[in-house]
Length: 316
Image 1 (tube, rainbow, N blue to C red):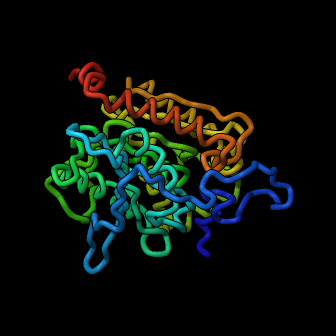
Image 2: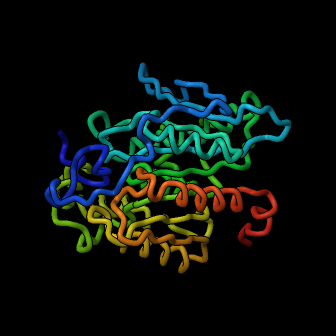
């Protein structure tokens, strides 16, 4: 298994942790256990949102079953898994919860590190945003109200969506080039923020990051900076809700605090919700899932609401 799987990977998904497995606390029942979509949702599976030659990228689109004349705000949902798992199914339980709250949710597949390295998965996430805009009329989606939510590796991608709307090199060639990849808000659960200074990470991350970036040693500092979301924070970065455990052994909470500070310094909107004593991936457990989704839904609703968008548009 590529060494990147040791980083940003939810323990229960990959069976990995940075302490002996037998000492890991029992966090209780899994929120995603035996997930079955609620009957009050419409789900269209394996829609093609991007193409790279013969390679098709798929998403599952969740919408409330009750048809409304109103256009639906849409959230790109991005699973975690250390860039070893990038399917459109693993975060179905998150996509379904948000759809029950009135969103359309596009639960996306993205290329993993076994297939493509940085910045390929970022390009996939941006292609998904462009697909939503290009197909908004077909599915009654609001092209002006698009957000993102992700956990761990997925949070890292959601953060890149929030901070790089004007960085052309991350757009990729997946399709719908005439559409914007800008989003209006993002929720990032356990995201990394900075790779230039690795002092707050466990030492295993140094090797992991070398493998993920796969560049010669003399180019490593520049590559780490290019792969760091904090590099791209500006006043126009999309509002960001950071959710992070203060006991996270894989991605220290210092990363979330750094991102929030960079947002504040830039005059952008960022909030930090701290999970006290939780694991790297608290959203995966019933103990935390309901509250984290409630907070995420409230944040996305407020930031994607047209009245809030108009009031918060920065002046130039």
